[in-house]
Length: 275
Length: 317
View 1 (cartoon, rainbow over the protein chains, first blue to last red):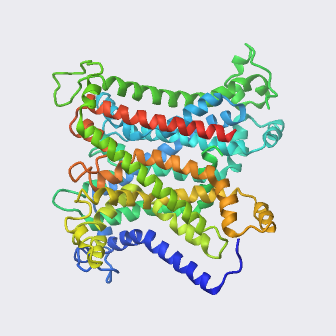
View 2: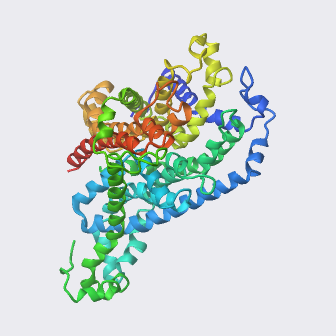
View 3: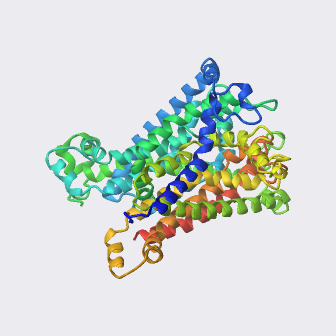
């Protein structure tokens, strides 16, 4: 609002910004710095503020650990298939709900409520079911659960985005001879591309980053990266350098993607919550 | 919209064809629209009913994986009776309430303040807002490990900083290892993680306010505080409400950072409902009793969600 600011005001503003950034980003800096520290630097008193000389030891150890490699594979597999399944189920359903009001407000309410169900409250029955049906420690089990827990949010956001497309555009395509699926694929999806990007981020936030279900439902075979990282913590000690390195590697793609679609995250959050 | 006639018997033949064949859409579209939605609807409904039903049923059994002789004996509401006499349950309810209310209020006030501070059209503020998003984008489990290490007694950087400031009375027994400070530390870490989300939603609310309103008010001689008081805050009230509710729900079910940082300890000073049911149901393998705690958790979440849903659906109309 205010274009003209006094010099003092400007300085004060910048000082405030620096303070905020320092408080909020220091933990992130510390994570990254720790990932480049030797064990000696890690536990030094006073702390080593900047790792010089930096070491790549933690990253090298990480990549030479077969368990880590296996769990990265699992994480990629589970997140990828979940995303595909959510798109396959969610896009047609959201389209049908937005365009034809299929399911009406009742189904919107069901989806809205399903979206808010706390997965943590389902850990015990899911654990019991997984054991009973021989689904314990299987990647497919995680895919199924993540799809279920992400689908409502995806549909909710998609309905919001698709409703913003004027009917006339689709009608025009239909008159030109496109089928329903053709319209979804060639007209609707390209128009909501920014929305799709932010939905993808939200889906990844709940599959790639998921911890509670994965730690309960997987063991040696289907462990995802977060669970393997948890095994770095033992009663005797914490392999902190490797933990930090794994954290940096696991967080980087999501952070970058999130920052890139930042504007649409705002749109997505607000549109996705019914406004 | 529907330029399409209601379905006729003959349309059944076209049901699958019409998905691909534009010529038959006049007959098939009625069914296509249901066909498009059906798989997801079935999936969601089964996904809700099956585990919820199983949870409810289990909560009325004596099922314990350490006492296989008992099996899934049905015992009615016995578990719930036991719950009413369980001190650890009441303690976890109380801790959950303190944790949820404190985190949500601090996060909302701080988030709104940050959004206001960074909504002044000053060059560079977009970058600051972007950078402040990072804590929100880093997975909670990673931040959990990170803060646990930063708060570790003696060696942790936060512990050392507090010692340096002469606050070593706090760190003497370690921040997360003392019942007096552990919950507070967890609240602050959750705020740190969640504030950018609040800021994002509230900033989104600002964007919906038409610039003309401010111009008009200025012409009428309003000062900056008045603009804030009479235009900005009332118009983002809805956005603030949304984010406060989302935060409440999110914090109520918070699990992983607590699990990783304190595991509910020391003692049971940070044991929220989510952790208590985990210890009982998964670690002690008392499926039946653990389920009854989970049911309470679900019930609370459900009630809060319904209030929230009512609010949203009414405001949206």
